[in-house]
Length: 330
Image (tube, rainbow, N blue to C red):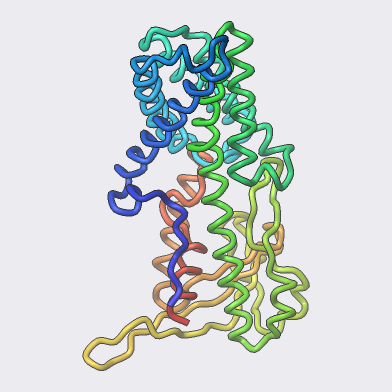
């Protein structure tokens, strides 16, 4: 039986949305403490300057910054989902939040603003131009830390504390969204390959043709189907694509999977693969039969939300949900 590789922290798994902020507070506290420790360690006199009160204050400020960062990340969604203007807005919001936190904790507003804002903007830019390394947590946290430290240094603050703020933004915002998106894409690729194999196609051929593909300027990944002519005999054209609003998609033959039993009777769900040539040759699993109409309604509502907010999969993450269930029950 296939289960979803969560990649989430302990509290998130057990407490849901509340756990997200508990995790964020914990990571922010750790990074805040690490920033203070590095600051003292590299100062004149080194750890002779250690102050437990200041350490505790840094941990507390870090926890607050972590919660704020997680909230901002949730509000703005995946990096690049709202374009360049959205990333500027994200950076400003991170900067303002960390500036206010710095101000109320006895620090300088501009130092907090520069560390948070540049940490966010640097992470967004690195996502766009940093290649594959930018898709890793290490790359995101490292570059955001550097940008946050430089921002703090330029405004007269401490490099290491600024780096801790930048690391918090990089880890709990940029890296978290990237890792979640890539994890979901890998899940969809795995399910797409499994479906085509179940239709009788060679696993070696399928492994070459169903791949992760980078999408746009902000390096978003999706499941792509190459060499469609190899599989065209199993697909019917003229299917509706909710993104383009045209009937240029292709739908495969359906497969039923047993998901359970009720009074000795098998309960089945029907799945098919859908290919979108006009959507950069993307590929995913959809429901068929009666469930198709429910799914179509949810996808329609999701499209409306996308047109208003620029955020996708707010109502229903169709391809991820279907990939997970198909792999579990096939």
